[in-house]
Length: 156
Image 1 (tube, helix red, strand yellow):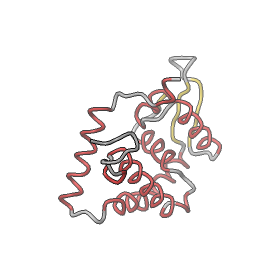
Image 2 (tube, helix red, strand yellow):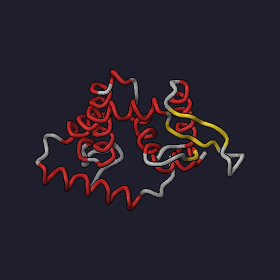
Image 3 (cartoon, one colour):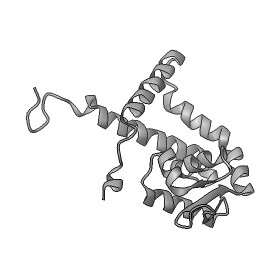
């Protein structure tokens, strides 16, 4: 049994620590490989979420990408400044911001797709193809089980 100092459960065996480290490693690989595009992993996720739809409101996008609304809004504003996303008041709900990819946004997403895929592959390249599939399925199971949890920022 672990004591108050954390003895008996090494940091290197804790799921939360390992999940954070895998995330840090992936962000580092993504940043390195996708640097020429000037897009963060969060921005890439938002662009990808918009690519499959005509438009989406910011609340829907924050849910799809699993971000708090403040982070989503900030990232979308930066993408809008670069001309990659168009934002405006929703035609169906005046309180809501509707977002859509611009042609420049679609073009950038297409141009960076190969490098983004390479970053994802590099994250798990040390695993066999079977282990990669298992790893993805395990992560999907965790997300499906806990996916409804709010972010700390949503609780404020």
